[in-house]
Image (tube, rainbow, N blue to C red; front, side, top):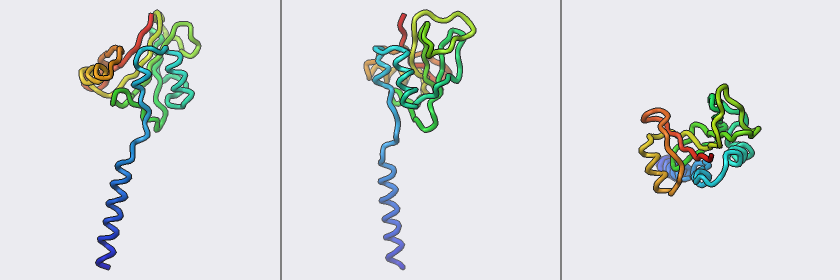
Length: 148
């Protein structure tokens, strides 16, 4: 009995270490946020791969659509967890129209959990041309690619 307990603890510890070292299944959006794509391609590919919902969770008055990540998709951008994926392109049926004047051009990006300063540092390190906008101070930041 005395030998069984240490052996069992050893097996459990080894199993715990192995499970902890397995990478979490996540989908990084860093490459797509280099601002060389377009809103339609960005959103359509995430929808077809079932990383985001097909219907927007919110549509701004300027017609920017916010899509919720699907359950279990674990989207990340520059090391930050993604709260929402944003997109809009004028005259594109993929996007719902808002109640106000639609913005000119197109836009795509994400809203992440993180401060704007820390997100800026990660974007600079990655060489991304995306713009950073504070959504909620010290909590959420938008990373956006625009085209006119």
